Image (tube, rainbow, N blue to C red):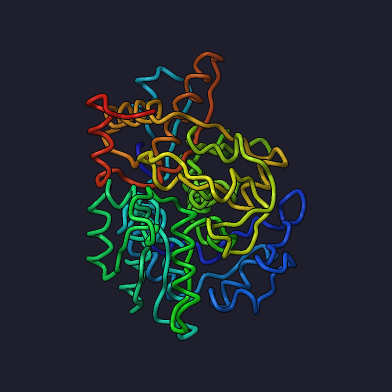
Amino acid sequence: MYRWMMSSDRVPEAWFNVVPHLAEPLAPPLHPATREPVGPDDLAPLFPMALIAQEVSVDPWVPIPGPVVDVLRLWRPTPLVRARRLEEALETPARIYYKDESVSPAGSHKPNTAVAQAYYNVEEGVHRLATETGAGQWGSALSFAGALFGLEVKVYMVRASYMQKPYRRVMMETWGGSVVPSPVDDPDHPGSLGAAISDAVRDAVGREDTHYSLGSVLNHVLLHQTVIGLEAKEQLQLAGEAHPDVVIACCGGGSNLGGISLPFVPDDGVRLVAVEPSSCPTLTKGAFDYDFGDVAGLTPLLAMYTLGHDFVPPSIHAGGLRYHGDSPIISSLVRSGRMEAVAYSQRDVFKAAVQFARTQGTICAPETGHAIRAVIDEALAAREAGEERVILFDYSGHGLLDLSAYDDYLNDRLID
């Protein structure tokens, strides 16, 4: 078989909380002004209380509200696919499986948390959200969720991606989102996720009718994404696999990586691998420290791996991976040795993405190409060692709106 599907009644009814399984408790976020641990009242202007509670929850499972499950059933469970043609091309004894998150309406994993965040905000009486987006996948997902729940959505899009990916903007506008390039006060700046977060937070705190919404990094975001790994566990059993040997995903802030990998954290013998761009090597070369999540220093300080909140990454096509920091949960796993991290250059990533397209047929997002690069290297290592390995990775999004990046690669214009 090539694909393992499950019916819509198999969508998980609770999110998996990895916090009780971490090697040590997470350090608390600090208030940007006082440097004291933040409390619920500090976060209330930005987030609904339900999400604030999830941010600090130590419950092993968190129930998913029925209206959220009903929306997730529009595309979930997503397929588990075996990449047999890629295996044959690599002549590897490894068995490669991927969770295809590209089948969501927005084309990526991002709606898994966008739907939940939209629901909780509406339940609290909020009807406008401000957010940032890198490559546009998060902005698209929140605009989609906003359309379903009657929310107004304002998106600050990193300027480099705003120029590279115009049809991402069209997607957001089709779903009713309003999109502007960021930073708003410097039209010559290529932008960064940190700068776009600053723009969105300023918007949210400046209006009583608005909350802020974040698509990665925070604990509640990774919590919502665990539907990916929970479904994958069940589907691997259907495929006859006891467990994967290694779980791989790209990492910018950590949402899709957390989604597929966190349910495997308690499982002995399962390696977890984060893949990032060598031009923004947060986990592989950053320092573990308290740092702001944004350029302007408006957000709480998080204990995480960071390149410095004023770091501006080069304008690579994988806009969703151009972030100076990482999720505190992912940072904790890397720091404790439970998770590995590797980094690749843009050319190596697109070489792998094109090989995948020419064997499996689908064109991935540049972000997803990072995971595929690591998967290929893992499969080749299995061939050299003569070992059977079960490799699971997250196909976090399609690249059908990223074809300018492929055009640059295929015509030798891609800059490393």
